[in-house]
Image (cartoon, rainbow over all chains, first blue to last red; front, top):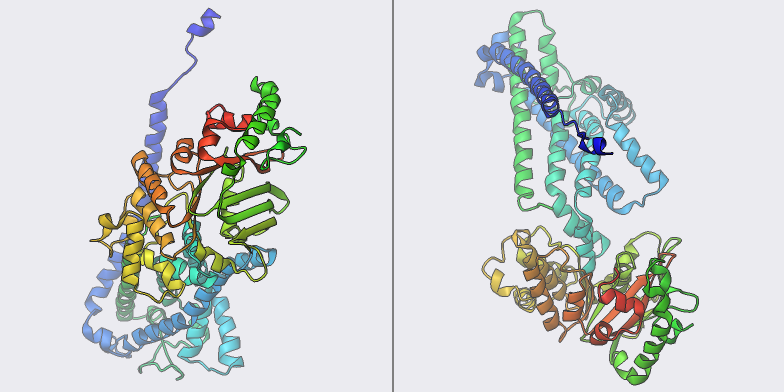
Amino acid sequence: MDAAAVQPRFEPRLARRKLYGTIFYGLCILAVAILILAILILLVDVFIRALPWLSLDFITGVPSRRAAEAGIWPAILGSLLIVGLATVFAFPIGLAAAIYLEEYASDTRTNRLLRTNISNLSGVPSIVYGIFGLAIFVRALSLGYTPLSAALTLALLILPVVIIVTMEALRAVPRAQREGAYALGATRWQVTARAVLPAAWGGILTGIILALARAIGETAPLILVGAAGFVTFAPSVLGEGFTVLPMQIFQWAGLPQADFQGLAAAAIVVLLVMLLLLNAVALLLRARLGRHIQW
Amino acid sequence: MTVAASPLSAPDGAQPQADRPADSPTVRTRVPEVAASTTAGTTTDPATDEPGDVVLALSGVSLRYGAFRAVRDVELAVGRNAVTALIGPSGCGKTTLLRTLNRMNDLVPGFIVEGRITFDEVDLFGPGVDAVAVRRRIGMVFQKPNPFPRSIYDNIAFGPKINGYQGDMDELVETSLRRAALWNEVKDKLKQSGMALSGGQQQRLCIARAIATEPEVILMDEPCSALDPRATLQIEELIRELKSRYTIVIVTHNMQQAARASDRTVFMTMGEDRAGYIVETGPTNRIFTQPTHQLTDDYVSGRFG
């Protein structure tokens, strides 16, 4: 008994345990470094190629067979129009669906199935949405190869994402907030509209903008509903013949001449700047709307 | 059967001693003690044991979540302009009982009320009674302060606005904040966020918010459990002031708080089936100095719970 009591019952191996921590820390740093390096190389490469081609004329010009005269104005307008319209369609429907699923629907088997399937929908390849858009909007509804068809297709594409992020934002509002409103004699709608939504706006808008960022980079589904590679006029909602930035990039990148590769790089830079602006707006909104919210 | 001698105790067959550990030495002596003191309590002055003007009356009330019975056989009268404290060990159903009174628990799926609860002599769960309307007249303050992420002013104005208040909002906000003893601290920063206040101030803001809909009853669910002792004392002082206008029912784990701030105390515990029930009800003074039941005595003296 005495011997057992004297013998140390712990073997701390402190140095070794700390070493494991250091090794893991190093691995994490390495992973982050690889990521940053890859992005940097990509960006620097694109910028170097794009620099000679970036000019005001490039942004305000229309595509041309002569690289020196080519511009991306129709593509910028097309992207803004289609993504803007898609948001107008997807936002109210997505918001309402999310409010229903999160605040109203009871936790039945059907509703759980519905929720799971919405998550699954957000993982469906975008080309599938393109085929759907072609069959339904372009053909069945006879909307033609127009920006309207494209916007409806993109709206369907981002709808699951909008619903999911909105549901998450609503779920992040603590139950105590809902109960506080109920306890003051609020109806369910008043609780939702005046207590839950205002507290969730920051998260909802951030999510919507991230969905937009996804939509603005989509190419494949738009090819199916009529996006063309050579459009020299500004798009109109119901007019056939339109293009978008990623489509323009895809078109130029496929051409053999080095000059057009440069144009593609320049268009990529413009697209990246647009994405960056969107993300900046998202950050700003989150900071402003969530300013004094800390649960 | 000796237990049933008290009007508010558990019915036949309920054996409160089941709550006590079997090896507790006091269990064996409990029965004669209870019998003796019950008789004393009921014969000496029964008048003081019932509130005069009853706002909320519960008779034969059992509360269930689906198949689970959380609270059973409640007989309780809540007197007007008085502070009634609900005390008892964790899980005995105090909060469930409290949240039944403003029909907050209607929001919990599977929640069932049996028995009869009247509010100003109207059946609280009667067919013509709307839970939303009830909640304006029976306000609630929660365990953790839950101000809305809005300005102090808008926090107070929220309830009146959703209930279609027609009067002068500025005046109502000021009155509510004054009654909650918060006005002097916030009168120059009404536009600031309610969430920027300290915990004690936030809780008083929530009390002011409850006051603003001009309720008759204010339910408080452990309103000081997240506060420091100084803020706790402020709230207790406030509770004593508020009872001149409002009927207050407060759940508390803090025995001193019940003793300091309440007029009547309801002691609850739970049986072997985990269903809570009321052991005894009476003027706070008597509950703390001459409890009728051994269980109450053990609890208020800190030997149990």
